Length: 261
Image (cartoon, rainbow, N blue to C red; front, side, top):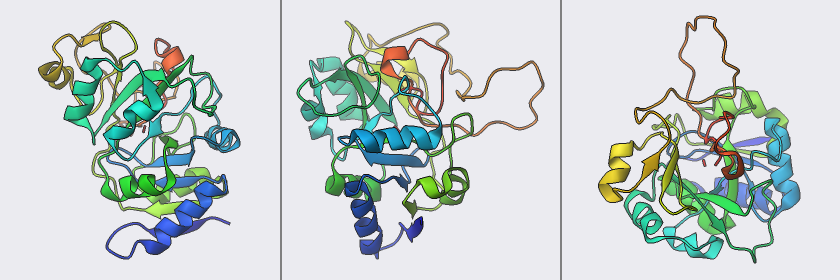
């Protein structure tokens, strides 16, 4: 049976203890980030990652990104990180920037069909970073069923994911609500895969050679929902799932369009 814990204020010991126990047991945890709520699993437990994908109703072709507590963990999980990628991380971590990197080949994990890459982010949420320091890297996707908007509060996440999640951490309404910007740093120059909370101009102020495909204006927020010609009466909530690095050119765009978080 799922449990919900307050993740605000000073009395956080019960929340941390329950979340760490759940992650160690291979179960799922919903947690707040600086963008949207995420559903998390131990990145090094293949069965837990699969449980995360099953809970969302998505396949291995869209592997989840990995959240880390500090930027110093970048080299432990990624290799051949260019100077441009380090500059972006130094400027925008913690924050709404996801970097698609070459994954360390020695790591014993199975995030899905990553084609040798991993999408990394340090969230700008103090309590969640503290949890990450206790659990280690977590595979985190937006807390929603595939095709639905990402949850901006714990109750929306609980309604969508129900008993598939062991522990829900209630951090209140998230203040960001916009997905992370995703930059692929595995090529010769950094390439924007998705513009989110960080604009192209902000990225280029740090690394002028950042490139992008197509229109340089900020696109509509991506969703899993198929496009129709029917008029929309409500604006969709943004999501924070990155697009799989192996499929970053596809039109699949569940929150944090793979890759966060």
